[in-house]
Image 1 (spheres, rainbow, N blue to C red):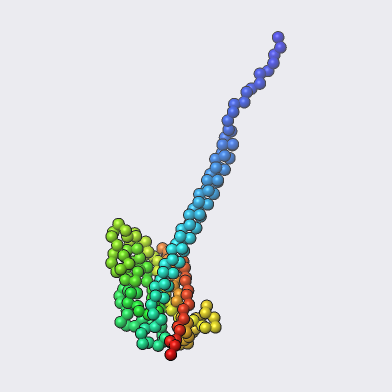
Image 2: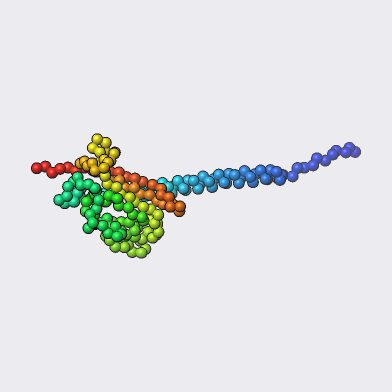
Length: 202
């Protein structure tokens, strides 16, 4: 009778070292995936806010250009460009502005409609929407808008004239931004549009 040594059968499974390496790799892959997802979501939020800000700025530019170039009977070359005392109110209602220069130096935080009602709350006619159709009342609290109206340089309409110089061209520039928790402002969109004065034909 011959003695043949028995081979020990290997039991399938992971060793402790293999298990630890696997767990580490899975954790790293999961962290990378979460980071990529968070970055993508932040980028989506930024893009949404920038698109929203650009739409708001364009809407305000259209509102400005819907007014007459200069007040009835006033010179189209007046300086400085500003609202008259009878057009000022607290809070400032843009609905009182009857010509484009009235909008110069208008600033609002939070964003408001022409009746000084916070954006998303008004019905577009000076009243409030039904409560079920209002935006969350703090949504635009950290948003701000600034409007500048300047005389544009006829030689280069992308540039404003300085001092008391005037021309047949004006530029309206609307900037929409948002403040963070530290009080720092981040510009989301700026829209500039140039428009001109055509003297009457005698």
